Length: 199
Image (cartoon, rainbow, N blue to C red):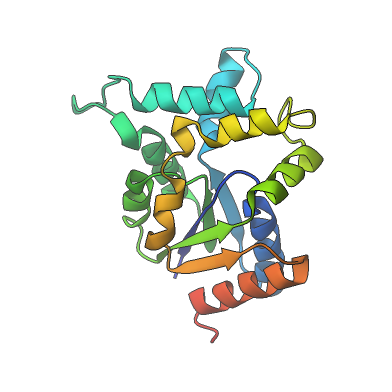
C-alpha cells in the first residue's frame, strides 16, 4: 500500500536529513520514494515575481496567501488550506511507493494529510541553538550563511511558524535529533519498518 509520511518540525530541525536517510533505506528495499515541500508553490510564485527565495519571503507569502480572500472554483475562500490543497493534489498524482510531505505547519495541514489512506505524521525536535548552527552551515537559502542570532529568532517567531509545536501531540512518531547521525538513522529506520509492517 502507498504510504504518505509528513515530517513536521521547526526550520533546520533535520527534516531533509531524515528524508535522505529514508530514501537510502527504502532504496535498499527497492521502494520508490519522493518528496513534496509546502515551500514548492511558494518558491514557484517567488520565481514568477522575480523575488529571492529567502525564508522571510516564503513566510510572508505563506501568510498573505492563507489570509487572503482568494476564491476556489466552488466560490469558497481558499483560506488556511490553500497550500495544503496544492500539496494534496500533487501527492495524489505521485506514483511513488512512499511519499514524504515536508513543511506541514498547521492543524489544517494535518487534516489534509488524513485524507490519504496510509498516512502518518512524524514530529522531529532539535535544540534551538543547534538549529541555528545547522542553518548557517547548510545555507540553502539566500542570506542564511550570514544570518544573525536575532534574525533567526525573529524568523522562529513568524506567524507561519506559530502552530508547529502544537502538532507534536498529533504525531504518531517523534524523532529526537539531539544526538549523532547514527542515532537519527536508527530512529528513521525504525519508523519506516513500522510503516511498512517490517516489525
